[in-house]
Structure formats: C-alpha cells, structure tokens
Amino acid sequence: MLWMLYSKKSDTIRDDPFRASLERRTRLTKDTRLQKIKKDAVRIARYRALTDRVLDNKQNRVYNGKTLAQTEELLDINPELYTVWNYRRDILLERFKTCDSDAIHDIIKNELALSVEHLRRFPKCYWIWNHRKWCLEYDPLTNWDAEMAMIDTFLKADSRNYHVWQYRRYVVDRMKLGQTSQEQLDTDLQEFNYTTKMINRDISNYSALHNRSRLVKMLFENSPESATVFHTKNKYEFLVQELQMVKTAFYTDPDDSSVWIYLKWLLGDYFIGSISTEQARQVVETAIADINELNQLELEDNGVDNQWCLKSLVFLEQQLAKATGVQSGRKNAILKKLIEQDPMRIKRYENSMD
Amino acid sequence: MTSLDKSKHVAYIKSLDDQKQFLEYWLSEHLRMNGIYWGACALFLMRAENEFDKKTLVEFILNCYDTTYGGFGAFPKHDSHILSTLSALQLLKMYDSLDVINNKKSQILQFIKGLQLPDGSFQGDRFGEVDTRFVYTAIQSLSILESLSPDIVDPAVDFILRCQNFDGGFGLVPGSESHSAQIFTCLATLAIAGQVDKIKDREALEWWLSERQVENGGLNGRPEKLPDRSSWEPG
Image (cartoon, rainbow over all chains, first blue to last red; front, side, top):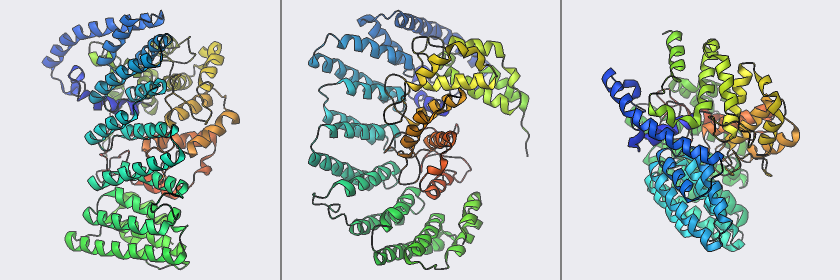
C-alpha cells in the first residue's frame, strides 16, 4: 500500500526545507552528493538520537511532560511517525485520568492548535488529520464553529483537498449528534448551500459536486417539513433547476469532466426513475438538444466534436430509450465517432453498441 | 519497442536499502515494511526475487513484530498497524516463509480480528482511524492466513457496499468522494470475498474508472486532477 505514502511524501516535502532535497536526489551531481552526505550526517545523528530516546521512553511507558514535549519535537520533524502519535496519545490519556472536563478541554485545545500548525505544512498527512479526530472524540466541550472556520480556511487554500472534505463531513456528523431532527435538517441544508457556494466559485469542483449529490439524496429522504425545493419530494422541480445550472456550466467549460459526470447522475436512474415518463422524456430531450447545440459550436470552433458531448449523448440516448421504450437509432453513429476520436476507450464504446 | 533494462532496475531496487548516509532513509522508517513489499513485487515481476537475501528479510520482518499488540510495525520498535501487518504477511507468503510465524499466528489473528468495528469496517490500529484501505488490508491478511469466515467477511462486504457513490465509485468511508485508490481496495475486498457481483451500477463504475486515463496516457485518481506518476493516492 505504498501509493498512499509515497506521493503524500512528495506533497509534504515541498513545504519542508528539512526534507527539501529528497525529490532532487536522483539528479545530484557527485559534488553536491558528497556535500549532502556531509550535511546529512549531522542531521541523521540528531534525528536518530531523538527517535531512539522517544521510542525507548515509549517502551518503558514514561508518561510525563518531558516525554510529551519530546514527541512534539520529533513529530515536528517527521509527522509521518504514526508510532509517535500513538505514544503522544497514550501520554495524554494518562494525563486525562486526573483532569476534569475543563482541564481536558484545555489540553485538547492546545493539541488542536498544534495540529493546525502541522497541517499548514502537511495538509495531506493522514496521521495529523486522524489525530485531530481523535482529539475531538475526547473533547467534552468542542467549539464546532471554530472547527468549521478552520475547515473553511483549508478549503480556501485547496478546494479539492480530499482530507479536508472528509474532515468536514466528519465534523458535520459529529455536530448533528447533538441536534434535534429539525436542526439536523437545517444543518444538511446549510451544507447543501455551501456546495452551491463552492460550485459558483469554481464549477470544476468535483469534490463539491460529490458532496452535493449525497446531500440531495439525504434532503429528499429526510426533509418533508422544511419549505425548500426538497419538501414536496418532487424531484422534477429540483431537476429542472439543477439542469439549468449544469447547462451554464458546460457552456462555460465544455472540457470539464466534473460537470458531465454530475449531469450523468442527474439524468440517471435516481431521478429519471422517480418522475413521470413524460417529464423524463422532456428533460432528457431538452438536454440532448442543448448538448447537440454546444457540440455544433465546438465543431465550428475546433473542427472536431467535443468528446464529452458525445459521451454524454450516448448515455442520454440510452436513458431516452429506457424512458420511452423507443430506440432513436442515433446512438451507434455517435459511438462510431467516439471509436475514431478516443481509441483509448474503444472497448467501452464497442460494448455499448446496439 | 524499447526493452526493459532488467539489471538496472534490479540494481536500483537493491540500492534503496543502501541509502543510510541520507537523511531521507531515516525519515521513511514508518513505511519501510511497505517499501520492501513493493520492491519485492518488482523483483518478482522480473523473476529476480532471489536478489533479496531471504534470511535477512525474514529477520527484519520478525524484528518488526510487536509483542504488545500482536501485529507488525513498519520498522523495529514501531507499533502494530494493519498496513505494515499486511506487507509483512505478503512478504512471508511470497518468500514461502509463513511457517516462521506459526508460534505467533493466534496473536496476529487476534490483532487483525480485533480491529473490526460493529459496522463491519476495520480501524488501522487501536486509535480509531477507519478507511476502506484497512478493510482490504485486514481481509487480505486474513486470506493469506487462511482464516476468513463469513462472520467477518459479510459485515465487511456490507460496509464496502455502503461506500459506493453517485458516480459508481467508492470512497474512504460511506459518504466520502470516489477515488481510484479506494476503489482498488473496495473491489479487491469484494473479489477476495467472492462477492463482486454485489456491486450496484457496475456500468457507472466502469465508465468512471475508464475516464481516469487522460490524454497523455497517465492516470489520475479523481476527475480534474493531474495524472499521478506514482499512482493512485488520495490527496
């Protein structure tokens, strides 16, 4: 399972001068190599001495302020040392035994502040995010607004960071545990509105579209009372609004796959299966007309069909046939174009032929 | 067609353990067991597995055994984790040496099975991080130890199926975004369990996966991300 560790490492190196040379190592000249060996010797001695000290203390179960500080020093150099995070947590657990809620909260506040510092340098390090979640599990007095603000800051820095989105969902779920069912619906709705905000900022934010898809399902399932598009459970009205947004998006950037994948879901079985046949025929035909028009423009501009238009048209022709029971006969011709233009996926297109 | 310079590849892999004068060697202790596994895989592909000294390898693995929690760490004195435990078991299996852990097998099984949570998922160690990677690593480990049983596998499969998304792909836990690496671990779990047929919306999954190859031939892990040279990692 090295994939998850290696490229993560390359992400962190850029931000850390202490490790800056790793990526360049293969290109070192003989001289710089020798210089590096000399320089590294000192650092290795320091690092190994510290590691040995910490791991020995760990083995001897020395839990005190000094050993806690040593874990901090070591994790500051190498936050990937999961064993040292474990040791740190064992020291903290020991300390919690003699603390009341306020004291535990104060300790955790300090841990959270420390982890923000680490995350600024290593925003994709699994172990740091995990430590933060662990802290929240033990915090009797979590300030959820502060957590949400922290998440917002990190999503502003990288709106696709997988870990931050995951952490956001975790925090929201934890928050909802303490809420009434009406408050929970409001939270889901706020989260839905947040995805709208993120998508308006950057339509290519697939992470936001993903989160939107699950919130939409949750809201249709749980929200009979609130006065929103979800309350009637009428998927048609929502679908028409959403398709309008998607249309604007694919006209803005016809090569952005995020929107096309989202469109595929909107016109997939989840929606099409729960509206009337006439409504289904109408939304799919409208989408086909819109995409054909866009593809025409692309063809005039670039001299070739837009592949995402073609791929989507294949899917929509299938959905139309499913909804109406009638084959339009257009699908195979589109597939033939794709076979020519996108030979990497030739098998997929061949298998889709009627 | 250019040919594979096998001897250079073999020499490179062997040289990875010969970097002790560089700081990076020491900063990557936490992934040493996994690194050796990947190196060994490459050697096996080139039918050069004997380039690793089996005796030294087995010794290293046994030195990484963690008597406190019953699994393997990534390096001597490091804690048991399901990731390094799988790599250790894979290496022992590949080098036909599983018998060296006969006297530890029950503790190892206890460690792995003890990581399963009531919803069928697995945590990576005792600190609660849950991830479909760990479900796969646990199920794969139990498979190597020939200790799979329906009371463990079926809840794990149910958990995996709950991780499928609107686009057909799978994420880290239920509700998290699809990622090629997570899809690998989910499909592998289902394959080991013999339950791949339980996947819903297979067409969407195949479609999404086939779109991960981008124009220059490289693969990305998620839509609209750059192709990743080392492969598929959530980030």
